[in-house]
Length: 380
Image 1 (cartoon, rainbow, N blue to C red):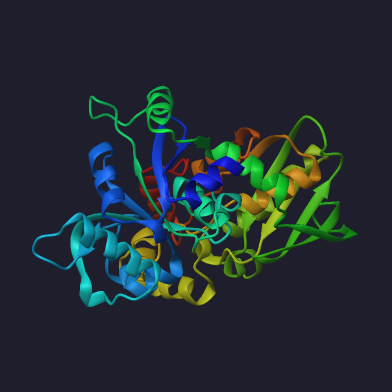
Image 2 (cartoon, rainbow, N blue to C red; image 1 turned 180 degrees about the vertical axis):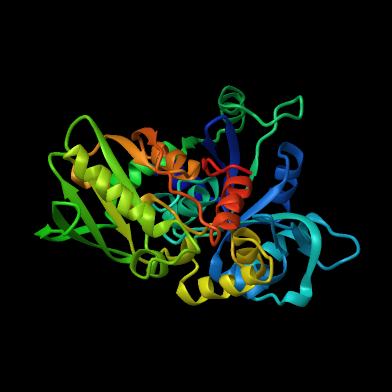
């Protein structure tokens, strides 16, 4: 890791691998025309990783978030050179650019990053941003998928050849996660107490502190071995407390607690700060108003300038590690939760958590199934 960081500090590319795709990566503050040209010769496209604050500043959140992807951007010029693009990226890094200077569509793809990097979401954008930050620069990177001579996205075998030829170190997202988990801790176990409940038996209630705030974890039985029943539940005031019929959250919470109680052991992680798939209570109510006018739950988020789902599961992963859980039977219908937990090294099996649709939430459930890939059984 030290040699890789030194490589970045000296203004040279490194290669970051995510499964079978490998990317050239460099801190965005060090971008110049030579580096832009190198990417254009060897890669598919230019990408930059940006925190939500800069995306909002640029105006991309409101105007150009389409189906979960940002429209690529460029400097507003007739003929755009490599130096123009390099200067454009540097101005974005320093927030010294206005919306009027941005041309859409362009050739620079923007990807949003989570604040805590790969420990919050194990994606390529977070990995490249983390490496920029670990090298002493702002957590913004320029990166691009490496291509092989056939013009296909390079696998790790070709990436190793390319790295050897160009004297570039390689790191995988998994290796970066392992490094950060060894050197950083983003959750803190603060207190434990016994919690008897009216309907679900007695749990051990554990309070954690994290950058996202306080988190309640309910544990029943010994969860340090075997396949453990786990529910990662996003806070939903309207569904969990008021039993709203607009969503299935409250019923999922109740069903999960019943299943853990019947099992005699398991974990419930109650994630505060993830109201409305991460957009907050007020914004969630705004999506309700849009849904009353025929907009579905996914498009409502997009209309308000948000991704369809802003949640991440890195904090939940660290909590499970702290509890000694290694193999998970995850109570979920969301394939993203399964995939993300697996990236943190857990063995993950899915346990379905179905609820009966109602007239009030059938459109909501269909949108989650059809547009977000949730594994929900509904008769059309």
